[in-house]
Image (cartoon, rainbow, N blue to C red; front, side, top):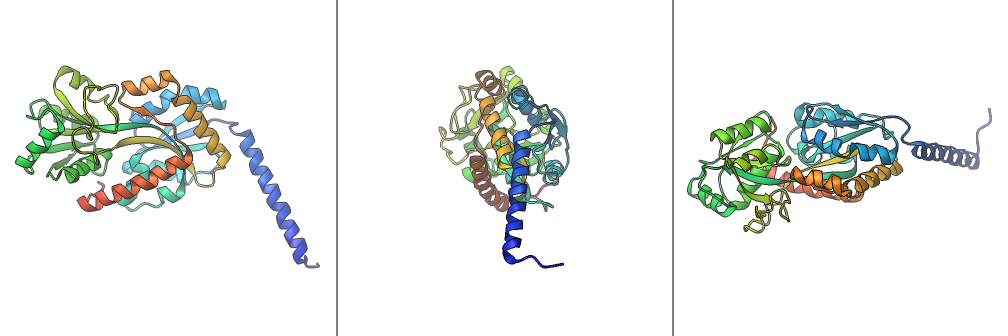
Length: 329
C-alpha cells in the first residue's frame, strides 16, 4: 500500500474537518429535536425548581421542545453538577445551579471536576439578593444598630443557615468581616429549620438568600424584622427596607443566583439559542413580576457576561472562605 503524500494527507484532514464541521452545524440547526433534561442538584421543591418552572413554558414555546427537571441532590449540589459535567455535550443535558455550584464549592471540598473549566456558562436566570432578617425581639431596627449591638456583645449573636458552606453561611461571614464583628454560625439541615430556630429565638439572625418566601409571612406578622437588602437597589417586594450601601456597608452586596450551564464542548450555537430564549423569557413583564413577588430579580445575561461573573465572584468568595476557614459539611 502506497503512503499518502503530505499534500494528500493535508487534503484528507481538511476534508474530514469540513465534514465534522458540517455535521456539528447540522446538529445545531436541528436542535432541539427531543426533550431537554435540566439537572437541579437539590431536592424537589427548592428555589431552583421554582425558578425554572416560572420560565419553563415560555422556553418551551420559544425553542419548540419540552424540558423536564431531574433533581439530583447531595454533597451541596456536587453530585448533580458532576452528572452534567460527565454528560454528552449535545445540548440535551443542562445544569441549573446556584452560586455555590459555580463559584464556591471548589474551595470548600475536593471535587472530581472543575466547575469553571468543565461547565459552559449559558445565562443567569435570576438573582436573589440576601435579606438580613432578625428575630423581632432583638433590639436592632436597622443594620447599623445590629452592627453596634454585635460589637457590644461579641460572640453572643448566632446566625442560622441551611448548612456549612451554603450561601447564607458565606454571606454571614462576609458581613462579619465587612463590619468587624464576631458572629456564631449555627448550621441546620435546610432553610425551614433555620427559620424555625430564628422564630424560637435559638438564633438571632438569618440571611435569606433564596428569595423571601420562607420569611415573608413571618415578616408580615411582625415576628421577624428585615433590616437590610444586600443589593445595589431595594427590592420591590420590600420597598421600605434599605440596602446595605444605604446603611454604610457598600461591600456587603451578596445573594444567590440561579444559572444555566452545559457540559464543555456543547455547540456555541446551541448555547446562544438557550441564552437568547432565557433573556426573552425573563424580559416578559408577567415573568419579572412573579420573580419580584418572591424577592428575586430577573437577569438573562449573555454567556460571556455569566462567565465573567463566575470568575469574579469565585475570586471574592475564595478569599472570604480562606479568611473564615470555612469547610463544607
